[in-house]
Length: 159
Image 1 (spheres, rainbow, N blue to C red):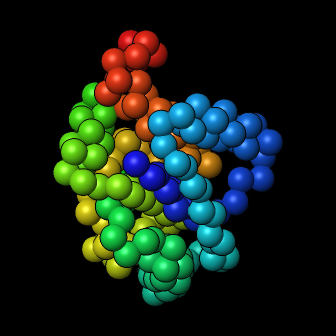
Image 2 (cartoon, one colour):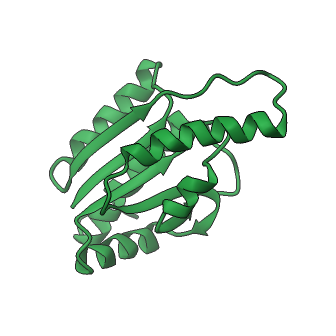
């Protein structure tokens, strides 16, 4: 299966880049992995509701353009469905059996995902009711995809 991660914002810190590189390397043996970084919109300190909506809309347009037409899309969102690692592994395995050949995971910017992105998503996944920096979320997501593969292949790693 081809896995694409579409994310808003650049990784500037070396430690995040190193973590991404490590999990990307581990995943190479299971999936063709692509990470698409999109620019985030600059936001003033005190946003109005209209400004927040406009920023999410602009980021959402870029996200939607980056998603392949026939891809299965998983949006990472606090309001999504929480899954255990085993459930995520089962979900990914079922999609592969169902014929999904390209899965796209979407990580939004600091304000979250636009309504258009959420409507495009086939599944909304929540990692927690807490908010995480998008850089950290990228690492957590890659680790969980790697863990899912280990679980599905019954290889040691998951405890």
